[in-house]
Image 1 (cartoon, rainbow, N blue to C red):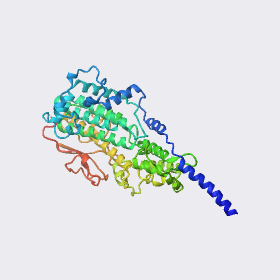
Image 2 (tube, rainbow, N blue to C red):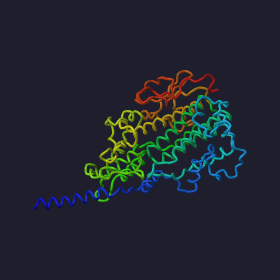
Image 3 (cartoon, helix red, strand yellow):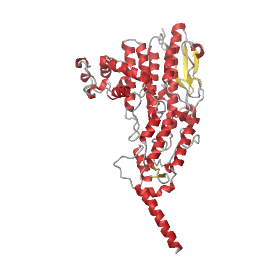
Image 4 (spheres, rainbow, N blue to C red):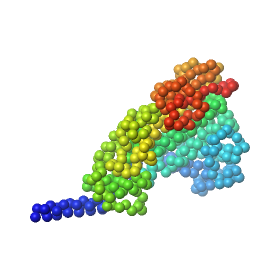
Length: 477
C-alpha cells in the first residue's frame, strides 16, 4: 500500500514536472538588456539626431538611387555625378579605390572622384562629422540580432578614408584629410560604446583603416600637420581598453540576455533545452518565431545548470579576461586549452553550440577581439608618431635621438607598444629611423625588417612589427 502511495505521489509530481516543462516557455527581456547596454557609454538621447544619423548611414550619397524621394529634397538632379557611365550598377566598391596608388584614369577612382566632387557628398560628409562629434543613441535589437546598421559604419569609414586620400592627391590639403580620419574614428567610437564583441571588432577594423591611411600619408608625403593636436583628438575619441572585462561588459549583458532567452524563470529557473539548442543554432538571443522546438527535450533540464549558476559562470568568465592586458598575453591565452582564463560558458549553461560567443570551438573570440583591439591601437599610436617624426624632421632637418624629444611639442605623450604595454621602440641609424613593436611574443628582437605591413602578420609569427624604416630620398624635404 505504501509503495502504491509513493508511486501515486511520484506520478503526480512527474506529471506536474512534465506539464510545466512542456507548456512553459522562456520569457526573455530584450528591451531591458538593450537599455542596459545603451547605458554603458551613453550618447545623447536625441531622436532627431539619431534619425538623421540613421538616414545618412542607410542612404549615403553614393547610393542615392535607393534613397527616399524626399531625402535629397532641393537637390539639383543635374548636379549628380554621372557615375552610371563609369560604374554601370551605380554601386562603387570603395575597397577597390583603397588598393594601389591613386590613378585618376582608373574607372573606380574616376567614379570616386565624380562622387567626391559632388556638392551633396560634401554636405553629407559635413553633416556626419557634426553628428559624430556628439554621437547618438544607437538602434539595438537583441530579439533578431545585434546592430542592423553595423555594416554601414564600416562602409562610411572606408569612404572617408578614400576621401582623405583623394584630397591629398588632388588638393594637397592635409587639414581635410585629418578631418576625415577623425570622423571615421568617431564613427568607430559609436560602435565601441556598446561594448559588444562584434561591434568592437568592426570598430577596430575601422580604426585600422585610419591607421593604415595615416602611415601611407607619411610615406607619400602629406604636408604639415599639427600632430600634437591630432594625437590629443585621437586620444579624446578612442574608447578605453582597460580593464578588459569593462571593454566587453556589453557582451556580458548580451550573454545574460541569451540565458534568459533559454531559461524558464517560473518554477525553478530551469533550462528549456530545445529552445537553447535552437537559439544557439541560429546564433541569436531567441529562436525564430516560426521554429518548431521539441519541448520533450525540456524533461532533461535537471541535468543542466540553473539560471543563477549559469549567470555566475558568465560573470566569472568575463572577469577572468582581465589577465589579457597586452598582445603577448592574448596570444598566449587565445586558445581555450591555454588555462590562462576560465572556459567560456558551455552546454551545461545552455550554450549548446555557442562556445565563447561565436564560431570556432577551439579559439576564444573574446580574447581574439581584445588582441585585435590592442594591435590596432598600437598601429594608431605608431601612425601618429610617424607623422610627428616627419614634423620634427621638417623643423630640425633630422630625426630625433629619442622619442622623448617629440614631447610635448609634436606629441602630448609617448606612444604605447601594446605588445607589452611599454613605449614603442625607436632606433636611429644615421639618416633613417626605425619605429617598431615587440609583436606577438612580447620579445624585443631589435626591429627586424620583414618588408611587410603590420596588418599582414600571421598569428603564428613572433617577429617585431616594423612601422617605419628607411625613407625614400628627399621625402622629408
